[in-house]
Length: 362
Image (cartoon, rainbow, N blue to C red; front, top):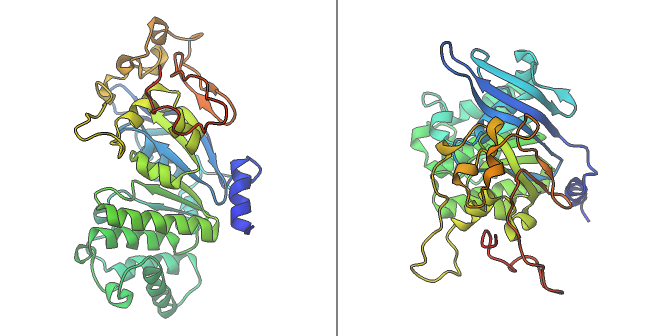
């Protein structure tokens, strides 16, 4: 068994020392004369070497803000970040800018959602890749250029020497995303955050990008945080999944357990809204009613209650003056729900997966 596989399995069992530990992270946006907005509200998770975790939820649930808070990329003015974010035990919340700049690119990297707006349109790709190498690794310009060529080749960009001279608009969407990944991998970071890395890409390029990220985790033992609303990406890449809604984690489980038997009605709704290959032609999708704007404040009860088919009167009340808690729900699972989805007992000898259609049981 390889060292990386051992590391990944140890991480799954909670034995490996986490690369990233996030505890009770909260992000509040405030503008003068307006009510403050809590975009992230008490989020906690960890990721170990060789492990891939997923942050899943609809747009506006706080996934990207969580990643920006971890990277220290949120503006200082008008934003309050509390809680703890530790990279290899080093606290990042409140750390000086010079410390964060020394870590970004070297020990932690990020692949942003839109490569066309993330890359500088006035600077050649080669310059943008080599500046990371020159900043964090002791290289001459010639050595950095050779390494940049190798990195572009590693991520599957054809004719990398020529591409170094081109500008972002001269590359296809898939190539721009690969160039961003090459920049993120330049210094072999221990932590990589991928924020919707396959958005707006066709399915073939999506598969190639995901395979590239999977190889990164296996080959180098990098800890990967995948932020997405695409449950197909989660199914093929993540070890554990954290489902977010209205700034909070509402369900945490192993990927197989989550897909086989989601407990939070919101998770069940997400899975039920995904097209299935085994469904007959013309079978309608089952969307979650309402929109994320229909959420109520957590201090008044469950934020998902206005959209939930399982909601009852007690879902709209406080618990001892605080929000609905995130509690253990079996081995390796946590749940924030008073009336979760229920399932019949699994028949003896039957696999859990496939026993029930996700979200079908009540």
